[in-house]
Image 1 (spheres, one colour):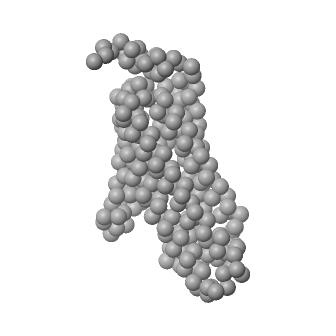
Image 2: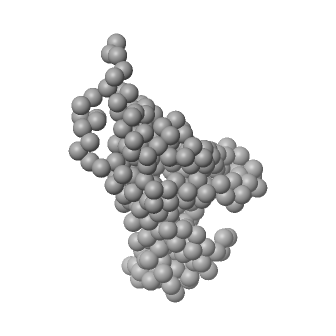
Image 3: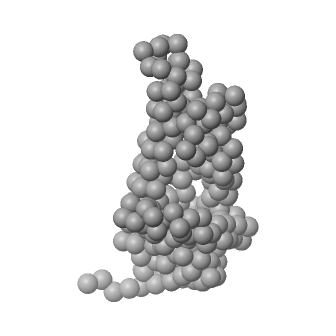
Length: 248
C-alpha cells in the first residue's frame, strides 16, 4: 500500500481540479445540448433543421467544440476521482471510473453523428446524386442517432455517478448530502437511458422531469470540490486505516 498512500500529490489540489473540470463540463454541455441543439434542431422537421444548421454554422461549430471540451474534461475527471477515492473501496472506484470512461468513449464516437448535418450541407455539390429532400432526411436521421448514442452513454454515466455518490457518502470526505444527491443523479441518468429503450412511450411522459434531479447533484458536487475540495484529515485517516488493516 506504499504507492497508494505516498502522497506524491496534493489531495486538496486534485479535488479542486476535479471540481473545476466538472464545472467546465457542465457549462459546455449545457451550452451545446441545452442551447445550441434547442435552437437549431426542429423536432419532426428535417428541412428546417438543416436550414438552421446552414444559416447558423458558427453557432453549430461552437456547440460542437464545447461538447468536445466536455469529453476531454471527462477523462482526467474519472482518473482523478479514482485516485482520490480508491482508498475507500478500490473495486467500486475502479468500476465507477470504467463506466465513466466507457460512457465518454460512446459519446465521443457519437459526435460523428452530430457532425453529419454540417458535412452534408458543406458537401452538397459532391452529393448531387441525392435530392435535397434526401439530404435533409439523412441530416435529420443523424441527429436522431446522436440522441440514441447519448442515451446509451447515460447508462454508463448513471452507474458511474451512482457508485461515485456511494463512495462520497461512505468516505465522509464531503458532506453526505453531496453523495446522496449525486447517486440520485446517477439513478436518473440510468433510468432515462434504460426506459427510453424498453418503454419509449413512458420515457416521453417522464421527460424532462426525470433529468431535473441531475443538475443539483452534479452541480453541488462540482462546486464543493472546486471551492472546498475535501476534508484532507479524513482522507488521510482512510489511508492510515488501510495500512493498519491486517493482511489475510
